[in-house]
Amino acid sequence: MTSDLHDPRRVLNVPRLHNIRDLGGYPTVDGAATRWRSLLRADDPAQLTDAGLRALLDLGLETVIDLRWPEEVAASPSPLPRRSHIRYRHISLLAQSERRWTRLSGEGPKEHWKCLVLTHVSAELREVLLAIAEAPPGPLLFHCVAGKDRTGVIAALLLALADVTPEAIAYDYAVSAEHLRDAYLIRYANRDRAEILEALRCPPEGAHRMLEYLGSRGGIRAFMQQIGLSEQHITQLRARLRD
Image (tube, rainbow, N blue to C red; front, side, top):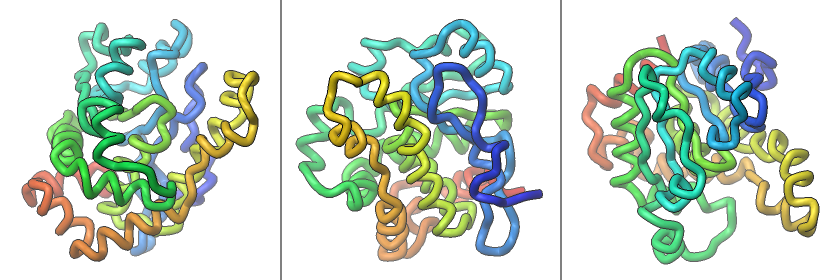
């Protein structure tokens, strides 16, 4: 099994989704690699056409977790709850509204953003991780709007629990900017190019600083225990990416 960071199998072909990928095949510190077709991360399925929706459903999804704010869901409802075989959960990761999150987090450099999330929304993190731990064993997809920040925090935590190398965790976060760049430059052609690129930037330092923060809390397992996950749930989460 290859564990190349650039493994082409990781990027999935779903028309109109620009930032969808598998968390499988990433190298771990003990020389193994993460499981394929277990956990998928993506941008917003609400933008899908019928063809894209069919391609997404062909991945065999059993569970979808929507991390968007309630106002985002109301403005662009997901098409997935209408699929009776899919277990759909909406859990707003960053508090209950964008306004509330802005009051909690304030302004700061992107390099520290993941640490702010771990500090301010532990209850929401617990709810999301618990939903993943208790989900059926088939493919599970989690997403926000662009699939880079909120989605990226959950991905980074799960990869850290699976003992994925820090370089691979940072890569998985940073590559979102590359995946989204062309589509967003076209979508927002009337806006300043530099502004768009800055909005899309996912600095790998953000992932490394998150790992340092977890280390200051005793490590990823200790952090998950501190936010209220049981040892059984932590084991179930790890099993998602490790045999």
